[in-house]
Image (tube, rainbow, N blue to C red; front, side):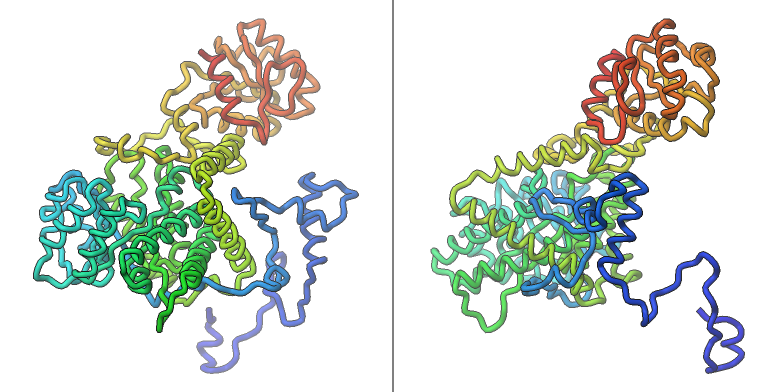
Amino acid sequence: MTNDRTLEGGLDEPEELEPAPGSLALAGPDDDWSVADWEAQAAAVLRKSRRLAEDDPDDRVWDALRRTTLDGIAITPLGTPALLESLATAGRPLRQGDWDIRALVAGDRPALAHEEALAELDGGATSLWVRVEDPADLPAVLDGVLLDLAPVVLQAPATPVAAAEAFLAYAAGRDLAPGTNLGVAGDADEADLLAVVELARRAGTLAVVVDATGVHDRGASDGQELGHSMAVAARVLRVLTGAGIDLEEAARLVEFRYAATDDQVATIAKLRAARRLWARVLELSDLQADEPVAQRQHVVTSRPMMSKYDPWVNILRTTVAAFAAGVGGADSVTVLPFDLPLGRPDAFGRRIARNTSHLLIDESHVAHVADPAGGSYAVEKLTDDLAHAGWAVLGRIEDGDDLEVAVAAVAERREAEVARRTRPITGLSEFPHLAERLPERDTAGLEEAWAGVRRYGAAFEALRDDPAPAHVFLATLGPVATHTARATFATNLLAAGGVGVDVAGATAGTDDLVAAYDGQPVVCLAGADGTYAEWGEAAAQALRGAGATHVVIAGRPVEWADDSCATGVDALDFLTRTREKLA
């Protein structure tokens, strides 16, 4: 920014201003902070929050702040050059410029799918991903689509050969845009795989999609998603080369599809690791090519991370995921509409999804920087760790291990973290809004469309789907200032399970509580520790005498309460118990 003095003075140097008292100043060239300095500062904060004891050494902050991913990868709280010692950087993005904005069109209703396809392309989508149930519907769905400008990627799990034939018959005599893919799944029947590949070779299109989003939908970790994709890709190469197709040509017929979540660093690293793994597979396959065979990546925002409650938060989730996909080097990005969990997305949901990429590309200029995450210690280290994790999964698959058993175990660990709210879901397990009115969408075929998707918040959604038959009486002890923190915690926790509360308000003693009480079977006391010690037990006894059958305390367990809730509680278990008492 400039001020009037710099404008008046032409090219004169602007006046150097002192930072305002209490403001943050930028680091200067003489600033020299060591890791030990950071440890001391971080340790001071953790001691205030009682996450470190006063006599703990400062370097304990590494253990206190370190987190472990579902692949068992330790994420350190501070990136340092030491993380990259002996590591070779690989997997850098190769995309030049904007990514392809790919819109998903479900062809179960041809007339509606046709309308949606044209609206997507008119609104700025640059390619179409068309799910096909009846191949005979393709001409109706694609009528008016300029196939030489907009690549079409097919997905027809039940009829891949018929869909490919129908598409090529419809497109006969027309040029097809680069990136057009007949879309046979990499794990399809061998005969179907070879038949579609032969059609693609004659038409000059891509043929195969190695789709890792299915295993992601079932709960896989990032490493499992990577390992699964490499196993399927290796199988494709074996089948095609076994049929006499040159290895390089076979590799260039394949496109990969991955999921992007709102864990942006993990998503960026996963896409980089995927390119590294593909290069290694081709290297071990003894590929001899004049130019490297780059991995073509189509990235889709995660379905399991979405929630049907407070669906507007899905816009934030998918924006972060799309950002990570772009930074990670995705060639094509599909942002799923925020209202997808509610039914068939409407025009508004589709427009928001489409414009997410446009805003990132045209206004934030994310696509105009080559490898924005390159050189980040955290990203480079996680890329390497995920590549090793994915390679290990590939090895176990090749050895005959059942990946689905391992995926189910990971999904259960994730759900346990969600249950304890150490992996929070905004609008569902955290900050729920019981009085919200959900947007109405066409729900025909909704259950079928989400079959096989293990949504992260499914257990909380099930509780919200079935609201509790009665409210909990929130027995707030003392003035508002002393009970607000725990009252808010308890209110949000109960709301996450579809349980409303009736709040006593400011109270001075048991008489005030009993006067506000209205016969609810469950009461939850919320107050400060000092208030509990002073008259908490008396409050519990008075409310029992007035008719309460189950007393909960917000805070640490005490002998005079039947249950307790505090940070770290298994929220699902607690909510289930509480709802049983309400019933």
